[in-house]
Image (tube, rainbow, N blue to C red; front, side, top):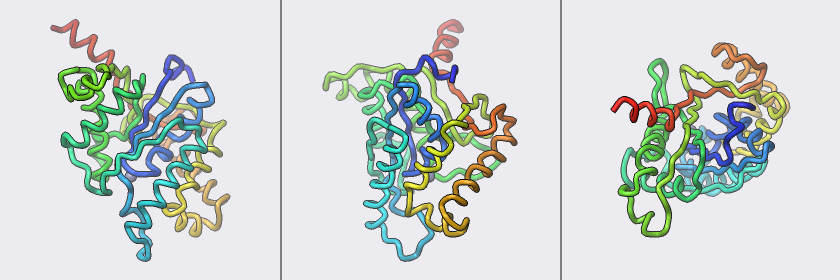
Length: 251
Ligand SMILES: [Zn+2]
């Protein structure tokens, strides 16, 4: 995992409970195995997810936080923070950005994983679009510049530079992480999201069949991206430090 060797701390910003595991669960497992620290921010409580008509928002709210915590425990995530915005209610606004900046300054990650907000050829859920977009802005320049949200600085925090963002769900990924050794862990973390997976598990004919189906689906997707690995996760890297250097040398 040469690409992630210099990383010490990583932050995953996920729109709903379960998006992190789909997008980068294998990479998270590998980072933790390599002795790195990984933190989760989950933007919404996921209280409207699922197709089951018997499911109430109140039930989902409690169940999904518990499921997300279990999934994170499977992968060895150090801390899960629930920002508790309503499902489908994320906006590109101060309330959301301030929270992201706060936790970026507090946790000081070298890299941030989130969902790619820029896609032209297929639909992105609104919460995913908002999460990618607001995370990008929160990382740069808001978390770095001390005059943004100075109340954090008054609390004793400093501005923080993130080196890179890794976007999952990208149309044009440029980085592939080999997750061959940890695919079973990734499947196990997905299975922790019982309320979201139960229909799929039933449809597939059990947990094992579900796991095989997930692996096959992911493999096909990665083949379309020309991944060099049998099992992998794909990202578009967005180098903040590199971009800053280029801006400085052009000015
Ligand atoms: Zn989602």
